[in-house]
Structure formats: C-alpha cells, structure tokens
Image (cartoon, rainbow, N blue to C red; front, side, top):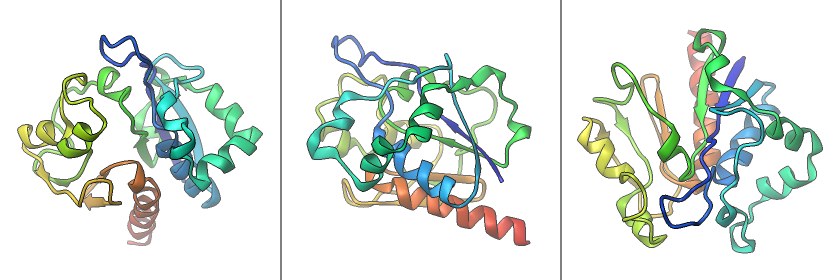
Length: 196
C-alpha cells in the first residue's frame, strides 16, 4: 500500500511575526501507525526539503509517546528532512493521500475543481479550539466555519476530544488528539476496500 503524506512549507503565523508549520503530533502519530502497518510512505511538501515544525507543537506540555519515538528515530527524522516537492507527485501513484495538520497548511493548501468534502460528514478544528489558542483573528479562515460554508456536513466532538469521521473517500480528524484515531481509521478503510 502506498500513502502520500503531505506537509506544509508555510512557516509564518499570519502577520504576527511568530512561526508556525505542521503540528508535530499530527505527523508523528500517523507516521508510525502507517509505518508499523507496512505502508510505503512518501513525504511531500510544496517546497520539498525540511517542512517547518510549529514550535508550539514541541513544547514540553505537548509531548506525546509518538513524538518521543520520533525524536529517537533517525530514519523518520531523515525522511522528514527530505520531503519531495508536492508538484512532482501524481495522485494516481498512491492508494491514499494523508494531509498532516497544523496552522501552516491553512496558508499553502489550495484546491481546484469539485471539493471532496462537499456534502460529506466531516470534522476539523473547532471555532472553540481556535479561540482557545488565541488565533481566531490570525488564521485566514476558521476551519469549522469554512467546512460549513462550502457545504460539508460538519460534526464535532467536545473541544480537544479525539474525533475522526469517515464518509466515502473522505476521512477527517478534529484536532491533534485525533491523529492516531484518524490514521487507524484510514488503515481500516483501506483494508475494507481492498477486501471488497
């Protein structure tokens, strides 16, 4: 099974002068779920090379077992430091594409054509979670509001609770606590489709 993990190349948190990027837990947990399942992983980002890690995601209070594991895994660190350019990838070469979360992706991910999540049951970072990290007026849009605006059937768990939803080909996770659940749900979805 081949999976493309897409990370951000954006490292500026709006015009605050602060750094952002991908959220480390939202990369590390799925990465090890996929690797342990024998998935052939390709890591990509818009610019290629080392994607920026949101410095807040690596604070002492944010540490998780997956992050600790990542910091001891030279192979994982090397693979992350050498992402390929996203524009060089072809979707047909992969069984699935997994987008790593964080605030950076809100600036460098764009879409063309019909939206995959329109009319689908989805979840994502809530307005309440965004307010709790004091970024409501910094980010270019609020995920919850944008998903509702484009016609998705937005569902949410309590703020900061793990939540992953699957609807057809779309699988979404609500927040960093949802990383492992989302990766496992994706593996189950792909196994079910392969068996069918």
